[in-house]
Image 1 (cartoon, rainbow, N blue to C red):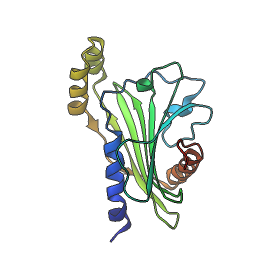
Image 2 (spheres, one colour):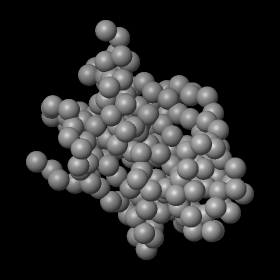
Image 3 (cartoon, rainbow, N blue to C red):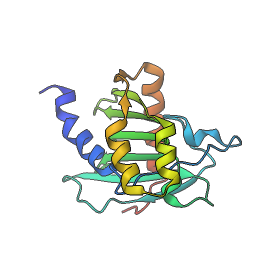
Image 4 (cartoon, rainbow, N blue to C red):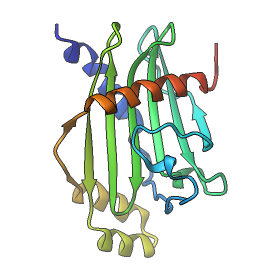
Length: 184
């Protein structure tokens, strides 16, 4: 079995955990602390919200979800979400980093970690018609906005993570694991 086939279920499980029940509307990034909106960056000095997902993790796997943003903003408006899966020893298995600039665009990355320390993965940019989404959002119809966002996105191609991004993904996973909530 190839390494990517072995970790595919982990990745798909993490993607399912990240599907929000309501649309996430991100605020403008704070120019004093741009790391909350830079894909695969360490969010040093950012407000962190961490939780353990309620859906059960596969055996011997630990899952954590992190959100970053301005503490004064409602949690749903924080512009960055990261999910991290680790084995029972705390070694990273998969990481998904989502940076939202809704209603206009989003940037996503997924990294998979092998037992020998190799990192593989992809990144993708998704563009949306910001004028239409803004008009729907201004009208306050969240169901219409969610429907529109789900059907009107224009995903770019999946790009493999380059070696610098692989290194940043590994550093981010280690940094987050040290700051995880609900430690055993």
